[in-house]
Amino acid sequence: MTENDRQTPVPARAPGRVRTGLARGSAPWLLPAFALVVALAAASWAVPVLLVAAIPACGLALGMVWFFRDPDRVAAGAGLACAADGAVQFIDSQTDGRTRVAVFMNPLNVHVNRAPLAGVVTGVEHRPGGFRPAFDKDSERNERVIWTFQTEIGEVAVVQIAGAMVRRIVPYLAEGQKVEKGQRIGLIRFGSRVDVYLPPGVAPAVEVGQKVRAGETRLDRA
Image 1 (cartoon, helix red, strand yellow):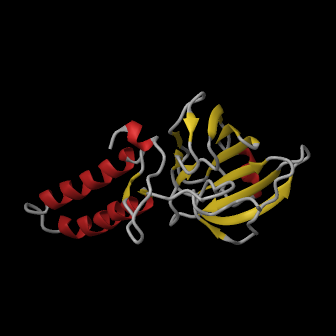
Image 2 (image 1 turned 180 degrees about the vertical axis):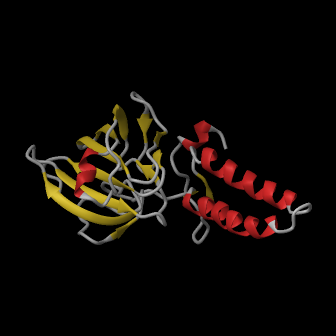
Image 3 (image 1 turned 180 degrees about the horizontal axis):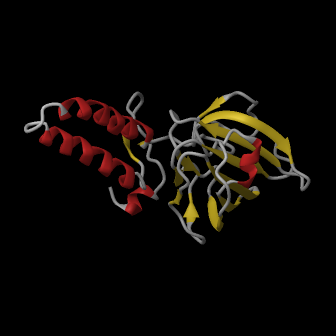
């Protein structure tokens, strides 16, 4: 699949059929993992004991495939869509009238994030920082990428926050690009958090502890 294919809106799918690929930005982790498995398996012909080491290496490689999975999604029909898979960690009001909805992604969640609404990318800002666990309040100082979208309801901000394990956020889009609701915007490698800032006057439809899915769960109240 080409880079342009990854940046197009999610196509409709037949009920019960979900195409799952691998996330862009996963190759630096997947290729070495599978290369290790192949090397150990090949070497085991000469040193049989290495076959034992190949078993956990194979488990690690398959675990990475699961982590970097990237299933297609059908965007929510109305309102704003969640930007991340996971559980709502907290919801709080900001001094400027916006409402922040924070979603924590554990290592078993899909880590590809999506645009909450159609519009134009008006800002992609990378801020270096620390690497506290994403569920920790100190993660407010973690490395992050701040997305700003101009949409039909005004400005919507999405903040990707890196976790403690691997410190890399991979943006898929650039400033000035048009975006569709539910379109992939980037990947956070390993445990992390995504905050969506709802414009003033927009109330959240989710609650703390609720499980949500990127692109599919409606975030705002009708």
